[in-house]
Image (cartoon, rainbow, N blue to C red; front, side, top):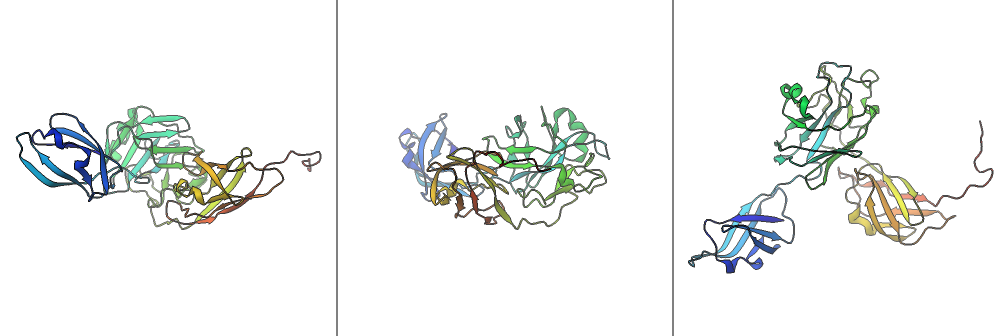
Length: 355
């Protein structure tokens, strides 16, 4: 929400004020102007820019020190930053042994799904307490890039562009959560892969990568990943061998609701839900509004919500989500009602050995 403006000569100080600048026909007002140098000023605006679109900066009046002036100066620019799903993890080599043809090294592949370049400096690859920063590197429009340990880059350069990390996430055979975040720690993409996704008993023991089937639906998990069909065991740096049309057409919705205590309730969804906080007023428990919610899962599948009134034992409560809740693909939520209650204290005979 800020720009740096460099002038050809030093401007008159009197005109360097908030009211002299606006964006997009006055829709976005400036809130501060800071002098960086004799020729450069930083102007901050009340709202963020329109991402990946042409923005128009208007300077009402501009004069140099001798008094030469211009009015209604307009400068157009296109700000670009990554939105969720713009850059995705598209291939995972969690267990390179026994080697099929590729190097016996773990790697990830990321894909830029947009027509814009992104500087990956200080982007973060994280997993269950491990956090690794990207070096100064740019992923170009529609580019596929290989990510591996810095000392392993020489093994992969013949397959495509490589970004080497000083440390690398430990990729377990059974699966784990992987998250890709930008330099502001905003989640861009993530996946919790599983060895069950290989769908092939011969490939799941190792040597073969997991590949995303349809990159248009990056948050469609089970059903959109499978074992590579390449004779090499994977396709690092190139289009996935399993690529074909595989749309995400269903958002099942609420999978489970369980109270942590009398006021805090955990809600689990079948897919990531990124607009839940925008619909907090439409979430009811027993017909009453909730007062807070926050994600407890890095992939936004699980949330903790706080009830307005404490729950009572012996009563069945109904969670009802009536808002415009959608998955990343735009599918509306199917299961939006779930009945639950506080757990009871078991009495003698309630739980028994029966075999």
